[in-house]
Image 1 (cartoon, one colour):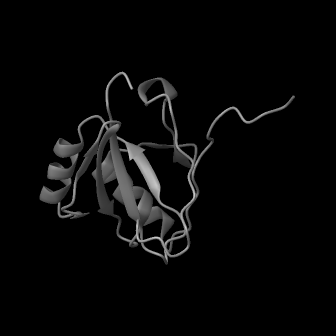
Image 2 (cartoon, one colour; image 1 turned 180 degrees about the vertical axis):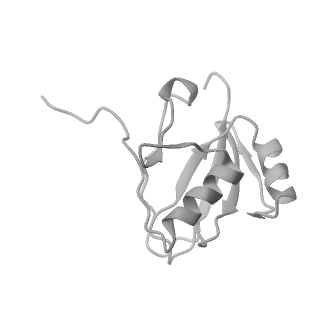
Length: 121
């Protein structure tokens, strides 16, 4: 039987895609190739989450229809660097038995969740 084999990507609308690509490259270190960002699967946590939130959930802004969650290897180091670069960083940081979380906002107001998974999870 045919089935889903994994998560293929995330797609967001942007007022200025070129400027937003540049921001993600400059501040988050993503590299654009073939018109989009790609991630090498062997370096990421083996599990990718696809989840639904109620329309009135306060977890991310209600006017934002989707939120990106990016896996990172040093959450505190990255957030501290982004603060120094003048990026809008939520001061809240959370830790759970499956990892640490922090949030930033891109220039178009999109809230981005950063997740440092627990090793060997």
